[in-house]
Every structure is written in structure tokens, then in C-alpha cells.
Length: 395
Image (tube, rainbow, N blue to C red):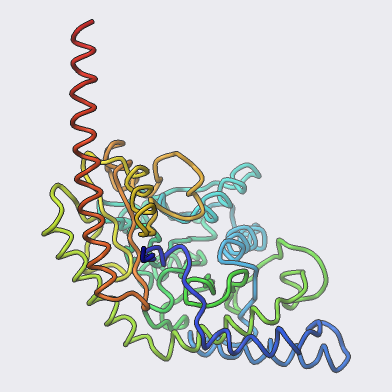
């Protein structure tokens, strides 16, 4: 049985180019980048070069890049670190109801510690309403954090306009760009971004490393304490091999961005067209013209999403019902609920996320399996439901 991976928004495979860049570090460059001897200086040089590479892809300065263990840590560092550092200017934060759990949970932590947080509603496509943003901005607002592209819907927000609106009221702007980096070019200066999160394993780099861009004009406090690593903003021994791999992944993503985006858009269009032809009673969530091409959220009316996911997995097709960071929870996705779907429809929603290594042949095979699985589950539901209704009628 062939295995088909359609869960690239959760994590991507490690690029061969990235692995090749990491191998010399893993096998020979083992020094601690904070050590002052030659082994340490060699490692530090690699980290500095990696910082330069990543900064160049977003038009930032090298000393504005802070390495972390993940996108989740970078998001926590942004929300809590910026809030703590700017407390003298206010205690109000604005975010949206469809942010990644690392944002929402960091905000809830701050609420328990005296901060006020406004969670903006979104429309049926996952867009915030600028009228709401303007209504809730006030003199005590110190931070607005809105993700660039949603990890379940793919919706791309107008981050430049959001940043400008936040700045007009004196607030800083952070964006979780984990799902958009590699799909779109970034110029943090032009976009007005004060802080931005990127994650390695979403762009064919290694797991266990991410970064937070923070403008030199923006104050931030550390949330992980230790030595003087990352210029005193994030303690902990630097993951040198991971950083080198991350930088290589960023370099490749920036180099191949047009080619990859075009391929993913073509694959996405093909998948959506064929799925609509082959399977009845489905809804594609989000506006297909205003989202990243690789994320496709589909509601299969009358089909339990967990059952469909399991059935697809048993037949070799890997998908998800939402963010990997909440996959162990049986609760309905907060993102899907926020766009107004009923509880039943939310439970019937699957996320397909394509990658640059997927092929049309794989999609054709996956589509056949999806069609058969949905038909079987609907048939079972119809038969079982009829029997259940009959038993209840007998009573």
C-alpha cells in the first residue's frame, strides 16, 4: 500500500539539501556556540552566518533574529515578552479567535496576570473585521497579534493594513507567519511588522528550531532565562545544527518561492476541482483566492471527521482535523467554530495540506480513497441511524 502524505501544514519532510548542510555540523562541528575557544568560535560563526541568511530573506538586520526551539516558543516569547517589556505603556492586547494555541494560551496567561485581552471575531472566511479592530484599539493597547495565514483555513490577512492601523494607535504589531513564510515574500520594514514568528519544520527544515524577528525599535523581555545566549533574550544552548538547517531551508524557500507557489496552486486547484466532482455535499472553507494554496479545509456534511481521518489513515492517506498542536483533544476546532460552522459541520471538517513533493498521481489515488471512504461512512451512518430511529420508535 502506498502512503500519501497530505498533512504538510503540521510538518514537512526534511529536504535533502538541508540534511546535507546539517551533516558536517552534526558529525564534526560539535562545539558550544557560547564557548570562547576555537570549537565554540567555529560554531558561533555558523550561527552568525545562519542569522544573516534568515535576516536577508525578510529584509531585516541580523541582530533582529532570535533563535528559539519552535514557532510555539517564538509566539510565546512575542506575546509575553512584548507585553512585559511594554507594561509601562498599557496592559491591553488584541488578537483574534483563530490564532494558534500558542498565541491564545499565552494571552490567557497574561489575563491571569492583570492584562486585558480582546479576541476579535472573524467572518465566514476567517478574516478579521477592520471595524472591530478600530473599535477595540485604545490608548492602553500595547500589542496587536494577528497571524499572517491561518493554519487550518489558509486565510491570508492584510497584515500591512493591520500593522498600520495598530501603529496609528501606538501599538506594536506581531504576526505568526509560520504558514505564510515560504508562500509569500516578506519585507518586514515595508509591511510594518515589529515582531514575526517563523518555524523551520514547516519549510522542509529540521524540527526543534524556529525564530522570532524583533525590530531593534521594539522592546522585549526574555521568558526563558539562562546565560547570555541570543543577546540575553533567550537562555539555552544554541542548537547549532538545527540553526544551520533552518537557515538552509529559509534560503531554499526564498530561492524557490515562485516555483513552489505555482506548483502548489496548480495542485490545489486540481484537488479542489476533482473533489467537488467526485464527492457530494462538501464545502470548501475559506475564500480560495485569498489563502495559501497548500491548505484546503473541507466539510464533509454528515460524515464524522475523526472516523474519516482514521479510515483514510488505514488506507494510507495522512490528513488532519485541525492543528497538530490540538490533535490530542476531542474538542471541536476553535478555528472552525469561529467561522460560524455548526457543531456537527465542525466535527465533519478535514484539513488537507499539500506539499511541494506531492504529485498528481498521489492526488488521484488519494481522491479515490476519499470518495470511497466518504461513501462507506455515509452508508453506514444512514443504515445505523435508521436502525436507531426504529428502535426508539418501538419504545
